[in-house]
Every structure is written in C-alpha cells, then in structure tokens.
Length: 385
Ligand SMILES: *Cc1c(COP(=O)(O)O)cnc(C)c1O
Image 1 (cartoon, protein in one colour):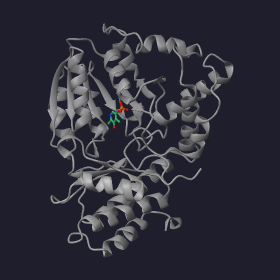
Image 2: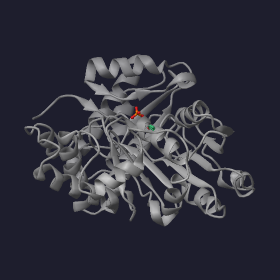
Image 3: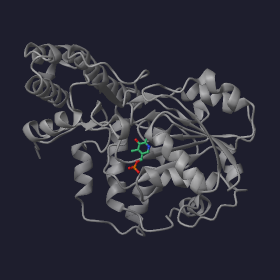
Image 4: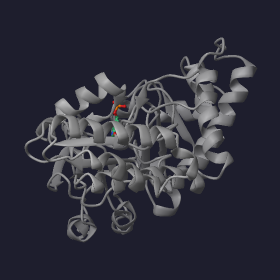
C-alpha cells in the first residue's frame, strides 16, 4: 500500500510493511498456545533490543505508563530522588514523583543543553538518593544525555537506582542496559520500536529487583512481581493487545535480522542527512549534543514555526513537529526513527526547503532547495534521488 503521507516526527513513526501486515491479521485470543508462542518469542527479542539478560515487561499503555510503573515498583513515598531535567519529559519525571509523595531534588539545564555528567557527579556520589531519574534522549529538545557516565557514578552508590527513560533511545541508538549499568529502563512502542502507540516496556536490573521487593507503594495493574510470575508461567496477567504484540515481533525481527548496530546506523544516516540539509538551509541545530533519534533545528527569529509545519502539512503531506511550550514556533523537530526510506527523507527536505523559500524568500533563496537536497544525499545511499 502506497500512501502519500510523510510522517517524520519523533513519534509516532511510520511503520514497516511487515508491521502493518501483522496489525491487520485476525486477532488471536491471548490465552491460546498460538499467542503464547508469539508472546514468548517477543519477550526474548525484547531482551536483545534492550541488551539485557533481565526480563522485559510489556504494559498496555503509552510510554508514560512505563514511567509510572518504574516509580511505583522502585520507590516508596518519602524516598528522595534526583531528577535530571533537560526538557519537557524530565519535568514529567519530577511531576510524577512528587504526586507519589517522593522528595524530589531537581537538577535542570537550559533547553538545548545536555546534562553534563561531571557537574552532577558530586550530587550523585554524595548518596542519599534512592533514584536518579533521567532521559536518555530528551525528545522535546533533541538532546542526548550521557547515560554511561551518569551510570558510572550511580554504580558507586549501593542504594541508588539509575532510572532511565529510553522512549526515544531504545531501538534508535545503542543504549545497552546491562553493559552501561542502567537499573530501570523504560520505553514505548511508537518511537524507536517502530510500532503504533499502545505498548510500553520496562526492565529492572538485579539491584532494582532487590529494592523493588522492599517497596511499599500500592500497585495493582503495574505490579511487576505478579507480572513476572505470570510471564514465567508463559502467561500474561491481563488481556494482551495480541495484534500489537504480533506487530512488535515483526518490528523487532526487522531490527535484529540485519544486526542491531546496522539498524542504529540507518537511523544515524538519516540524522546526518537532516543535519546536513539543516546546515545548508542555515538552520542551526538546537541540541548541544544531538541524539540520532531526531533533529531539532532552530528557526530564525522572524519565522513562525507553526506556519512552517502547517504549510508542510497542507502542501506536501509532510508531518514534522514544532517545539512545545516555550519552544513553540522556535524550533522544528524531525524524527529519524521508523520505516523511513531515503526518498522519504529527500521528499521531506525538499518540502521543507520549498516551504521556507515560499514563506521567506529574502532569507531563503530558491537555490537552497537543490543545495539542501544534495547535502543530504551525501549521507544517503544512491537510490534516494
Ligand atoms: C514520547 C515520550 C514519552 C512517553 O510519551 P507517551 O505519549 O506516554 O507515549 C516519554 N519520554 C520520552 C522521552 C518521550 O519521547
């Protein structure tokens, strides 16, 4: 099925044909041997993509559900956490923890900046925190945070867990849970994992499991102890979204068949192409340390980003995102995750360049259309033009 709809947002993302096909299969019942076989395969594939030996759990929720699951399974009211905030999603961790009665200390950087591991080292190793909460990739700014370094400090504290939101990292770039020493890693289905929204994921290290067993927070749907027991019996606690899980199997197989590193490389290649086109158009990158998952481009003050995204949508069937909150109108965010072919990248860049020329001819001469595309093509394979 060919659609003329170009989705290059940092989630949801376009889906591979195999994933679309799995979604359209007649539904299986979740208590059948057919489904349980698929489910157990998916749990194994998920471990490979999370790069962990620990079990990975699937919740039927958007990514925020797994964020909450992480907190209710690992923290008790009255515990103290350090929340490292580099944008909107970091703020969500802080807000959620406060609602659960957790003492929140915030370390916040300016929008566009990444957390500098050196500057939080003292805070972390001083101890006293039950958790350090952080985004691997902060999707609101396109920033990638230094999880490996942060993990190396958290490891020095026996009672502190590193809780990482990897919604736009898992499946998009190399974030190896066990090797880095992440204690709790969560993700969602509609971004790096190339599925529709509706599933979220969580895995706990051994250290996190030990702490989790002492946590006194009430939990029912999110209780990973019960879910673990069910999964070990080859079952799920509640109804499973069987079509989504079949779709997930297809998506994980695609990622793993060619090798995870090759998959990451293809995401990165699109990132380089978009960054090169952005540079040719004179749009600086907003993120100080950019993530491979998405590129945030800064617009000149005179340009209203909302006009740009609206024009792209109306004239070119291209969906990219603007900024949120204070960044509304000031940046454009272009996603690199999901089933995006080279010609789609070129179409989006062409459309963006034409839109900018149309809206602001004095700043963007027409010659930039060809230049931005040829800059992007340097990073894409030859079948793209
Ligand atoms: C998308 C996203 C989430 C979760 O959002 P949902 O809308 O609940 O799926 C969490 N963290 C980050 C970094 C995200 O990009």
